[in-house]
Length: 234
Image (cartoon, rainbow, N blue to C red):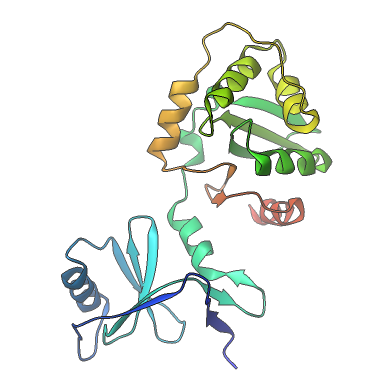
């Protein structure tokens, strides 16, 4: 039985008219570009069923050595239940942590704060609130939260109120954990700068977590899994 399988969810297999007899990475790239009619960012031979990985923008596809089909879907390791495609996408979309303008984020320190993560969150995001509640049990971590109001106009108003609060960390925690909206304030909140930052790094949804290693985690994950990832960072 194969250790890996191709997920049926959202799976599409496109038969290509072109077909290289036996392909290396360069010829696969050329053949796929000819079929797509556009540039492919990268091609990599994998150890998964002899497939080639095709990177195009923020998407990953797979093809065989003859370039006779194109697979649009995720490959799952059935032993570990790991989405290998998403794991690869996370690595390809990694961000240089030192380049992030942390002065534009709400800083929360728990314990010694030695471990550091960044989150992009909308104050009206249900998954962000779930993540905030679960993270209450984390210790020895510093969290920099970029307030990314993308869900509604009300999100921008709440983000501004948090940023203008005397204690931003407390205001953010009270809002996300206790649903206590801070009083409106007037100050120079960096909302437009954060929106531009999200656009620069192609962050389209909340929450998005960035580890100090640069790995990007789209969406909320269980805190136990987040702890495991933090433990793996050297």
